[in-house]
Image 1 (cartoon, rainbow over the protein chains, first blue to last red):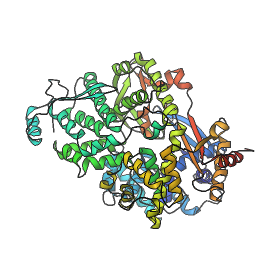
Image 2 (cartoon, each protein chain N blue to C red; image 1 turned 90 degrees about the horizontal axis):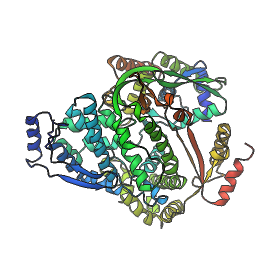
Image 3 (tube, each protein chain N blue to C red; image 1 turned 180 degrees about the vertical axis):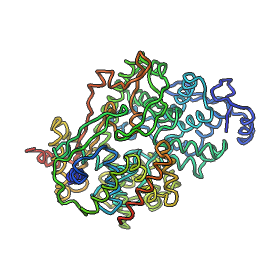
Image 4 (tube, one colour; image 1 turned 60 degrees about the vertical axis):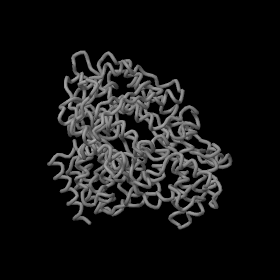
Length: 160
Length: 478
């Protein structure tokens, strides 16, 4: 079931994952690397987003497979997910671990920018995905984050 | 690109030379004052100024006029017969409110960037032109048809941007003020995070869209929930800078609209009013049942088209709905509206395909699926709801139920997004001024807002009583 996939993914990420943005974009990028967890992504206000994943995360919490703790920073609350289940039979275990290791080096905003550019490149912006990402995320896309987002996608590509 | 306000109002005035340029590009005629009688705002006036003349022209473009054929609340009229107001009326109202907000920003910060203000007001006017028929139900159908495919359907915001920048009548009108003008409108509508105070006019807790629809929907449905002190709220709007963060990581700061301390009670009513409107109107079970039927019906036509059996849907091959499902281009999208969908139901009610026949006939005659409130049944036991979902999905996968026997409906409304998804939820908060001049989150200051809990809905719509009984049995023992 979907909620098991969420709980096991968090387990694979060292048992802990910070933030719903990171959760959404991590699953998107894992699937973009060919590790299919069965979630369908559409474009939401903030880039690729899966309703099913958001719902599965709530179900995993309701079923006691994941604990969610809320913290506050800069006036905003954010979630810290802790898995209470073992990793189990996670698909493509080694590659998934490596993807998560790479993602852990980058901040959530960079994950969002990279996931957005990847999604846009497959949805009508093959040649100008980064330009369109800049248009949609003008406040987030500093020169440094743009460089990091490209570096992140470059690293993931070497795993293909 | 600069416009002059001929009314002598200094709001939009910057320099006369540029205004002459614009005037010559729109044909050398001074626009005539135009008035729209609106049930919410009374007179909405488009002055003789170049800018407002252009906005009037935009309102008369064919893409904007299409909004007369798209209802603001879709199927809500099946519950609230008065709720037949259109996105056209709403959009004109949003322009009116945007103009009030621009004027207010000027008063608060003591100056205005007329170009940015004009872009924001124009964006407010056209923000809904990309809506399809029965907006969210139709979008859900597109989403379901796109499942598993790499190419995903466009949301209405992106259709709006395409209409503004594309080869359309509206695009041509807006480009009279320069290509940069319409590109800036599209960029503002697409931008997901605030760039400056003008973006608050189109995207914030007090944006023009929300300040119009909450009151308009209340008026037109006749619902008595959702009232709040609009003039007082507006009179107490101020400008300040707030931090933006994702997952606890700070990434920028942005100017937005916050509230003065004297509007504390008005802010509480605003939060409560919107929350009540969601459950009384937007999430009404009969409205959502009709939406589920339409989503399933459009999906069915899409499936028949994929199989080469579209004739079984009862629709002719050149019907606008079939043409759009075959080729999702802008020109085909613009041929769709609520009227096209309603009239297609008569064709589909006589379809060879049983699913099309049944669903369209039900919509035509308001024979809706009945809702079983599973969430209410388990009264806050989220674990039981999650287990029920698992059982139901297994039953559907094992064909205990057919694809159209049951429809799941799950949604959630947080009265106040203390824990919203992602960064821009910082913009979804209400910040209220403290006596020392700083501000704080309303949820930290108001015991009422603090006490409000997120409310989830989980319903199953069932085709008939026998199926309803089987669904209820699934809930046993949980």
